[in-house]
Amino acid sequence: MYIFDDGKWDIHSDNLIAPLNFSFLFGCGIFDTLPIYNKKPLCMHFHLERLFNSIQYFGIPFDNSPEDITSIVLDGIEKYDVHEGKIRIVVDFGTGSKEDYFKRSKNASLVVLLIPSVIHKKGKRSWKLTKGWFNRSKTNVIFKHKTTSIMENFISRERLKNSEFDEAVLTTDDGILLECIFSNIFYIKNDVVYTPSLDLPILNGTMRRFVLERCSEKGIAIEEIITNLDVLNEVDAFFVTNSISGAVPIEFYNGKTYRTDHPLMDKIVEICEKEYFA
Image (cartoon, rainbow, N blue to C red; front, top):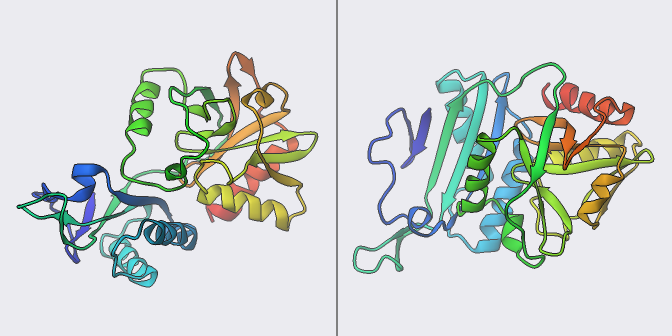
């Protein structure tokens, strides 16, 4: 792992986190994770647009521009010759003073983690899903942002590690279908593609956005809706998306086996394979 902190790239991580850092103390920060493939950060403009929307929404006193971060990321990829991996960009509210850790003594800080790894596995694959362990309020807008206060997601991922499942489906308290822990959901019914609406407390995932745009461009019928979790019992097929995995068909959920060879789903998976991981 390579780390950009305090204005420079470094391979050392000693004393990296300040004890009074607001992300460390309170989870008051935002982040974004994007893939690197063939030495290129994929859909970086989508990721930075979302990151800076969150910076503005939460009023984080951040001085860098999207162009600054782009330059830092490209410099790191070139400096360490990273052909494939992940970039994690973290922006926090700053650091508290020694006299009163609630009082900020330093403006927002930027940390960038560059992680070489294999992210793209070629060949057909599918996932098994289970129901998530935590429900959400329909009015909680925090889930529209990638914040560093992600205990719920962390605990869920730890539980998944000890199970046969790859992801978990999330809903509101009254059963409205939302998303998965680290993926957005799409399903197909009567040759129309559906995905939960951004009016709900879900993340505007970059692969979600990519799929919506490509479907619209290629004349594939696609709609954003609000519907109950039970709809998954009636679908022809469904798949999930995230920026690291692309589009992944679902083979099993809630005791039901789903087809992973639906022609329309195959077409969308192929579009992601050829045009996203290009």
